[in-house]
Image (cartoon, rainbow, N blue to C red; front, top):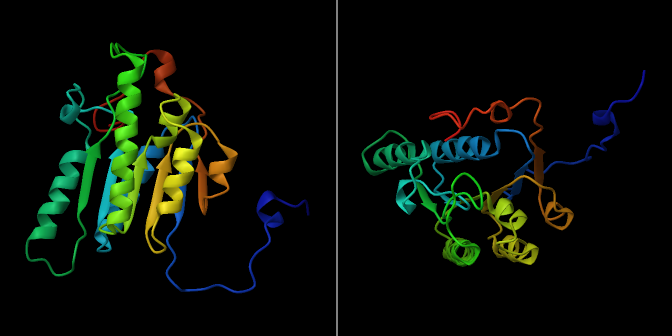
Amino acid sequence: MPKTKHQKIKMPQNFSDEPKGLVICYIGAGKGKTSAAMGLAARAAGAGKDVCILQFVKAGNQAGGNIKEGEWPVSNEINFFESVSYPSKIGKIDTEQVGLGFVGILGDAKDRQTHVRQALRGLERAREVLLSGEYEVVILDEIISALELKLIEERDILDIIKLKPPLAHLVITGHNKFPNILKQCDLVTEMKMIKHPYYKGVLAQDGIDY
C-alpha cells in the first residue's frame, strides 16, 4: 500500500493534557482565514474565554469605511450575554479595527505613509493587549497581510509572538508564507483557492465575506 502524507507524520509516544497556549496561523489565497478565526473566537467565548480581535488592513464603520463587518454585532451580542445572568460563563469578545482599509486598491485614496503609521499603531495596540493578560485568546487578523504590503516588518510579528503569555492563544492570518514566522507557530492551516467569485467580477458578499 502506498504511503500517504499523513502516514509519514511521526506520531508522539506520549500526550500531555496540560494547558498550552498555541500560536495559530491561517494563511493562503483561499477564502476562510478570517472566517476560521471568527469561528474560533465564538468557540472560545462559548468556553468562557475572553477574546480580543484586532483587525489590520480593514476599515468598517468604526474607521470611516463603508463596510460594517458582520462580526461586530455578533461580538456585541456575546458581550451582552456575558454581562447578564446565564447558566455558564460566556467570555467576552472585544473587536477593534486597527487598519484603514484596502491599500492601493478598490478606491483607496490614502497615501502609503498614512497606512504605515496606522499599522504601527496597530502593532502597539497588539503589544498592549498581550501584555495586559486580560485575554486568553488574541486574534491579529490580516497582520500577515500588513507584512505582505510592507506596512510592517517580519521582525515585528516575531516580536509579537514572543510577547504571548504561556497560556494565551495567539491567532494570526494573512496570505503568504513567511518561513521564519511559520517556524514559531504550533498550528498552520493553508486555505487553498480552487475557485473564487472575485475573479468573475463578483465583490465580497454581505454576511458571507464580512
